[in-house]
Amino acid sequence: MEGLQLIATGGALPGRLVTNDDLSRLVDTSDEWITTRTGIRQRRFCGEGESATTLAVTAAKQALERSGLSAAQIGCCVCATLSGEYASPSMACLVQKELGLARDIPVLDVNAACSGFIYAAAVARGLLAMRPGDARRYALVIGCEQLSRLMDMTDRNTCVLFGDGAGAAVFELAPDVEFAVDLGARGDFAIETPPNGPIRMDGKAVFRFAVEALPRTLHAVLEATRHTLDEVDWVVCHQANSRIIDHCVKKLAADPAKFYKNMDRHGNTSAASIPVALNELAEAGRLQPGMRVACIGFGGGLTWGGMLITVKGSAV
Image 1: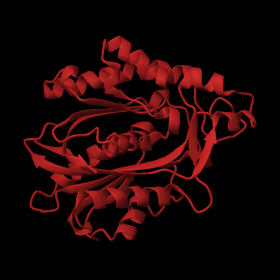
Image 2 (image 1 turned 60 degrees about the horizontal axis):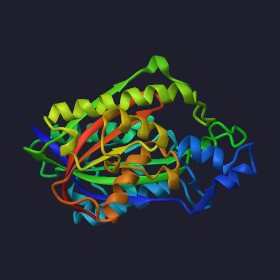
Image 3 (image 1 turned 30 degrees about the horizontal axis):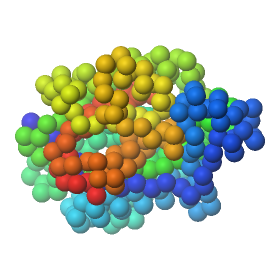
Image 4 (image 1 turned 30 degrees about the vertical axis):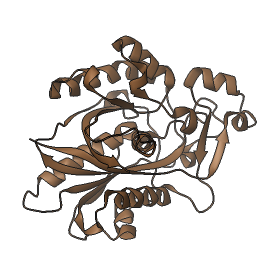
């Protein structure tokens, strides 16, 4: 079985910092209220000259440079987003143009909301496997969002949750590599968001869904690779709410130090949250060759996705 292994990461965050105190001047909320219920203290919004596209291109370019590969060696580009500026061209096509990727490779976007990066990686693996004779065995996978443009800044239930950002990864399809992926959806449980917003959600219902989906999906990828949680170095979950992760850590009787968190600095960046977290770990020197990483996404759609990957290089 051929699997994906992580070669390099990249990331990009917009320049406009928005704190909980900033939001308290717009809606009836407070730093204490937001922090105790979500773990979020600040987030970043796109400012002038910034967009989901500029973030995606920056993150993708950084990941490609760190990989040591040329643009000609990339065999596919898949971008996960629900907030791109255009219906067409796709975000992935814009990245292809800016990075000079080859013209004879598959390039496309996927929308699975907060599970999007996992879905995108699974799609990339399938696309690479379809071309066994092609020497281009590397995939560029991106998660990027500009959720600030979809938010109702008068709705205190949602405007405090989300942020903008982008993360990217270069994966290699290689033989005899430990890899597992688990995907699913409940379209009957969806809360609809129009193309131009605003984002709406039933927080309590999503919480109940997430605390069930996270451990179930984690168990699925562990069982597929015949590993225990003790044999995994990091669990990188979608960064929606610290209470969701804490609840699942307790339910799993797991070591909380294995579960990376950064929602305090970025809020919920949907499809960008997992690759942004991977990039932070890599930049901090906390992803080492041979490490096993479980990535778990859950959220809007409703969707869920999990994968277990190994790190080939230092990832930066």
